[in-house]
Amino acid sequence: MLTWQVATVGPLLGPDERLGDAIRTGGIPSGPAEFFADLGNLQVALPVLAAVLAYVTYRTRHWLPATVAVLTMALVPVLVGPLQSLLARPGPPPMAPETGFYPSGHAATAAVAYGLCALLLHRREPAYGCVVLNAAVGLGLVRQGYHWPVDVVGSWCLSAVLLYVAAYALSRGAGGVSRSTRRSSSGTPSC
Image (tube, rainbow, N blue to C red; front, side, top):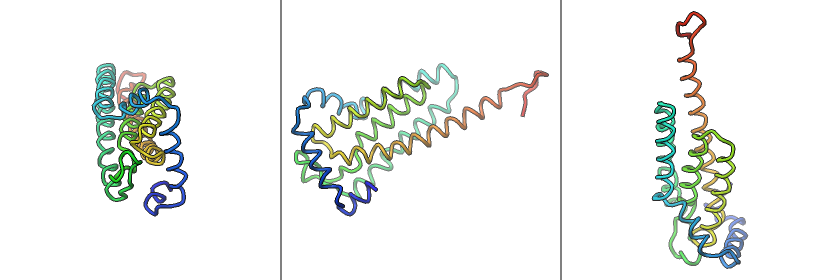
């Protein structure tokens, strides 16, 4: 629905731009907003994901999590770039008249990288922290005038699909690994 609104310059874009203007000119301090916006940069998100992948690979001695994570992360620019070019949404006033702001590549990078970290670490706390962190990244991107709110929310929707597919692949792979390593009561591998 959000992509359709952007493609057709639908009625949702007016309130979206008013909300973006209100956030940008509101009382959120610029310094913390810039810090959180920067967490969506590849130079920050990828090393964090790489460290988690190294840890998980070392602990599990399995390459499936790293393979799934790398493939999932690689899909971000493959999907976001063409959408940005095709839709050519203008950015907020500091960025205008440039186009290509929907969906937000920074928001998608953060959501997928940190979401994969939470998935791979298998803990509830990091998942809640991941949601809060990505909300702060999105707010920082809007506050600094890098994106409109719909740009960020559209990226989160795309990221949710990518993370769901990654979680499914990891759960199927984990099931396959555990089934193949189980042994029957006689000590022979079971089918």
